[in-house]
Image (cartoon, rainbow, N blue to C red; front, side):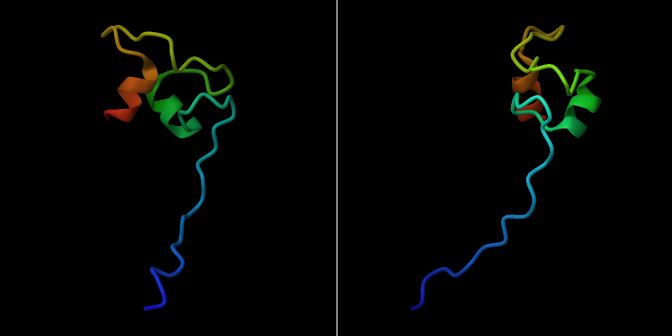
Length: 55
């Protein structure tokens, strides 16, 4: 009955430009990890953030 205890939250992935998409995922998407471009549209008409979040 001591509660849930401590949870290991791991490490936060690097997001150099602070746009919400980790740098390694930006490399896979073909976006620039140094430019906050997550709200730009890809060829499908979705933002890169939407594409990454639903991949």
